[in-house]
Length: 263
Ligand code: T3D
Image (tube, rainbow, N blue to C red; front, side):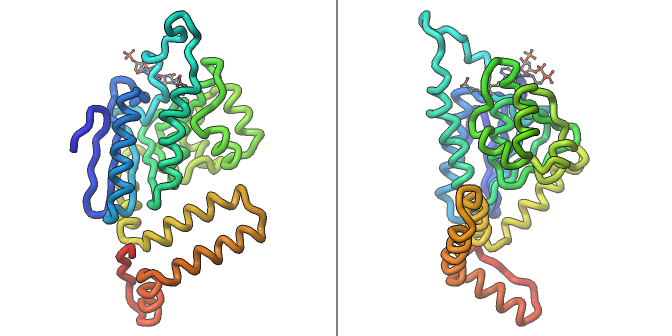
């Protein structure tokens, strides 16, 4: 299946989506949203997929909303910016957070505006040293959106989140890693290999266990301690019935490497 604005492949348990509008630093157009919706839907429906890798073609990761589709006045009326946030961005971000697979964000270049939201909606973010993150909303007189005000204070704390949101200054990949905003920053030349290593790892991991780990960590921000321990117990009950758990225990006792099937 080929798309106008993304590259998509799905083989050997590894699904890959590469935003492919390099001339606009992979900014979000209506078509890009449509293509992403379709491809992520396909990954969700494929029981053989065990990890999703998101990246960008060319020198950018994603420059946020395509501003050439944003004339501020439409038919004499100010544009209602809530429309696309509800119709496009909210389902996109939620589809990544609720996908029962690990999502790796390989940030190859600049991420700006909702491009930062897209990166932070991934489970594990690895960025090239030359990549950067810009909360460009400040320069347009907007609030950070597409989930950024949810992710950012949780990742880097309210003080830093306030400053970077209000100033819109460029955050280097190194700084983002030091702040805990992303998992790792690697040399530019190592990004593809490091991303592949991670993807290969997850393609052979106990996929259900990884999916429920994603769920339980997300839930901790809304739960009290008791509720969180009960949720862990509930999810553990489910995982105790998986083939991968049986295999993990057998492999340990037999002193051999486990062969997980994702079942
Ligand atoms: O509207 C709604 O639905 C609400 C939702 C809003 C969500 C948002 O994301 S709002 C924020 C939108 N994004 C931005 O404001 C970022 C705009 N871009 C930039 O500030 C800069 O391009 C960067 C800092 C990201 C990179 O700068 P630089 O110097 O490396 O590259 P450049 O020369 O500015 O960009 C290269 C080309 O990409 C250029 O086109 P050209 O001149 O070569 O034909 C530039 O216009 C284009 N481009 C970059 N970002 C966008 C874009 N075109 C359209 N929309 C963009 N967002």
